[in-house]
Amino acid sequence: MEEEKVVIHLEKHRWPDEVSALTRQRWTNRLLIVMVVVAFLSGWLISAQLNVTTITPVDSSKYARLDAIINTLSSTWFYGKDIENIDQTLIERAIKGMIEQNGDPYTEYFSPEEYLQFSNSITTNFVGIGVQIYNLDGITVVEKVFRNSPAESFGVLPGDIIYKVDGVDVTGMAVSEIASMVRGERNTVVSIEFIRGNTNIVKDIVRDQIRSSAFGEMLNQDTAILEIYQFGADTADQVKVYLDFFKDSNAKKLIIDLRDNGGGFLDTLLKISAFFLDKDTLVIQQQLRDGRIEQGFVATQQRYTNFENIVVLVNQNSASASEVLAAALSERGNMKIVGVTSFGKGTVQITRPFSDGSALKVTTAQWLSPDGNSIQGTGITPDVEVFLHPFFTTERKIMNEEEVVLVDSVSDYVMIAQMALDFLNYNPGRMDGYFSLQTLEALNAFAATTSLGSVESLTPEVYRALYTQVYREWYTNRRLLDPQLLKALELLKP
View 1 (cartoon, one colour):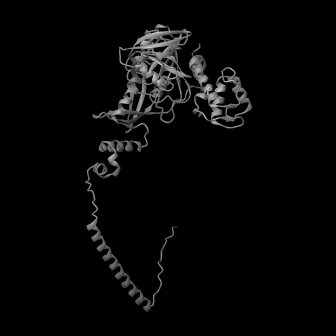
View 2 (view 1 turned 135 degrees about the vertical axis):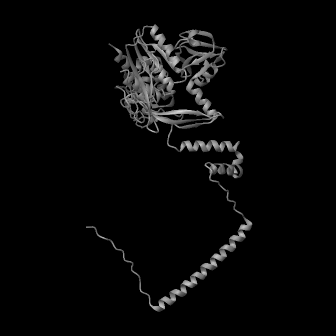
């Protein structure tokens, strides 16, 4: 049985003389209030004559408030005088603020300049000679020579050292600076002096359009590796060049390397899928905002049947379209995936360009694998998990010239040095950043192979020498040192 709650108000009883006194007090208070109001109105009327406050009218149209704010800032804002093209600048900032506050990191607004840069980055086309280079201790080495490139035609080889460009010694220059010197207008000549072994070779190479979003080579007599860096507008054409080469080379086993591939265009994904899956195979599903599912299939029969076995490599930087391809090859091609769990970007963006050159890249759907599995926030879990050496997955810091770390100290620099020593097979004893005597012994063992001499502490010179040697080993012998690649080769064995 429910209880009914009753609230009773208690009031104090007042005698007649108290009532009379209370009445007089009320009239006094009312008189004071009237006097204050009159004084306030009088003051307000006087001040209104001296300083009129203008209220900007805002109509009820959809964007009236935004227009009113921009107009007011353009004409009144003190700091607006320092901004060139203030109306346009304010509009750009308003749009960017609106996009940045929506919680979606993949929806972006591009100014005309930003959109041009974005478009160039996704096509990866430029005019040059067609090599990938790296720099160690001021020496620039050719790591890769792209197929059908001017560099390949003129006989440039991996391992060649770039010594001079158009007669200018480039020793010690940054890779970006050297690249800008090598690039230029199509059909023009760049003279490059290479060092190959003990021989200096000068090659006058004719620049041409370079497409560099894919690379491939034969690893042994019947095994090839195809590296896809992104899904650009013409990446499928580049991939086909390497697959044709592999077929002509009698390759029967293939490693598809999607590590560090951040994605790209959907139609490119479908075109590349056609090289490895049969026509009408479901590759991708997109879940739209209204819940509808759109599906993408292989449109043509282009599968390379010479490959008897294929393994796919992914890592923590494989994202978006590369994750979708990996999932499709796994679920519909029964291919093994090796590496570590991928990034987990499972949303779809389309780009809407505007007539002024700007553009909006906006999320419109969510990726789903052919089996309906979501990628967003989860990524692709490899069949065989293999980690790189921690040196390559740990953020590395540059040691300032004045810094020195002594034995029995703890430092992030020591931790990175210990990882480098471990990778180079000098046993540091630990990799937690504590500078032990065993770590010092390992440092001296490494230093004995260099011009450093005996060391008693970790200095910037020793620190630089260590990680430089790691990269030298990695770039020179990566095919023998990459544990993920080695595992893929192992899985391809009969």
